[in-house]
Image 1 (cartoon, rainbow, N blue to C red):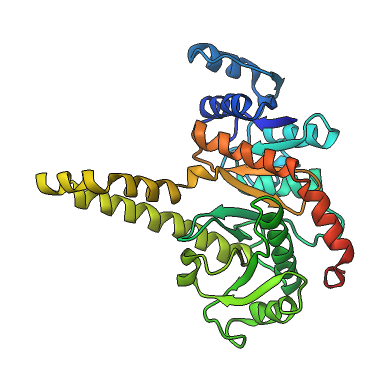
Image 2 (image 1 turned 90 degrees about the vertical axis):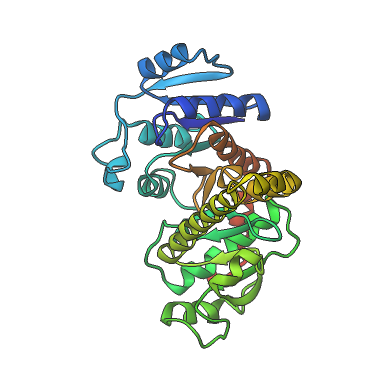
Length: 333
């Protein structure tokens, strides 16, 4: 199994990306292609006493920044680490591609270089997130700000397959993000999507309000990319505020600090449960080969866990499962 890594993408590239890739080599027994400026990669490796294992470097001269136009990956910066990574994936030089770079550029590259699975109307970014009960999946998290009802229907299908085959949920519960549980609630898009999804071959359980998402009332939350991204970022922000608030409460005085010792293990468990680093990033569902978007601020552990998602993807033949489902689903036509 060989994973192509965009060594130059992300806020802490290339150091944390290289370190994370090497952690993944050790933990998952994979081979890695590091794509990026070879001189910079080798200097970073030497300066930080990193030993490259089961790794080759493909040199590129350019980088797509977070401020670049998303279409730079197929136009102005075709020799960037991200663009070349997609080309290597397309050529079969590796089995999956992982980048912590520009989300829009990753979406464009995956759609126009890797290309969509036959029958997929729009690829979508799917993020595994914590809940009070167990991990849940939110999609779309930003690839498609504007959607049609049939897109949301397919997001539910692909998300259900992900949770069943990757996280081994028996009959994943799929819900539609809305401002009320009733079928009559919401704008035109979600009403039309509801009408399609209630006859879907997956386990559609209706609408879900934002306040119920963290409780894990559904396993897959479907939304357009604009709404999904707002949910994701709000989720992460609230989790950080709560953890900071808990820490501040216990640090107030000597008695509160002593009290903390009694509940430390429980708080540590909760912190781990709601730590985005445990999930590493998001998968782009609907394209012909595995593409993983790691968090832009990824450190080594976060990036290693993003690579883990690529490994899971490959081990469970998810793309083949999506292709089979689309072949038998008349609503997708």
